[in-house]
Length: 147
Image (cartoon, rainbow, N blue to C red; front, side, top):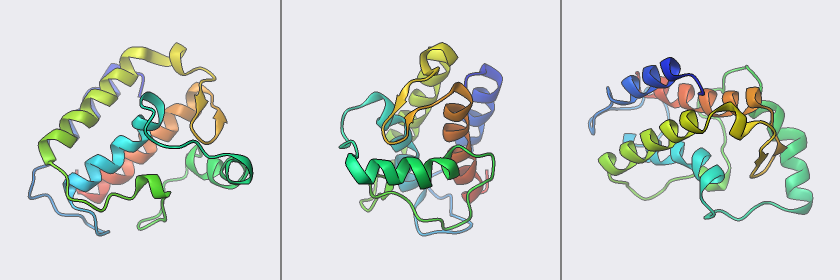
């Protein structure tokens, strides 16, 4: 997510989505999916989600982090954290624009910004772990909507 070519490719795929795009699996609408994908970036750039503490943080670091930062793709219909559950319908254009802006911001800030940056729930992550966290999640949901 730090290389312009990769970012351009992802944005091109996002731009293939329309308000009529249907999921191959799952229940989210395309606008909910875009909003859902924004949460990964909100956890970095915004202060609108409470940070896990105590045993919850320990459990996330011990059991969830290895799944999130591994190269192994997510399974279809995998469970997700409460922060990522989008129930309300969202405005497609707003969420698409927001996601693209977050992706560009991440690429622009670059690897140096993310090197050992503290994540919301997993502690400090390496550049590779951040890259995997962002790209794997986007890949999962872009495939979910066939782009």
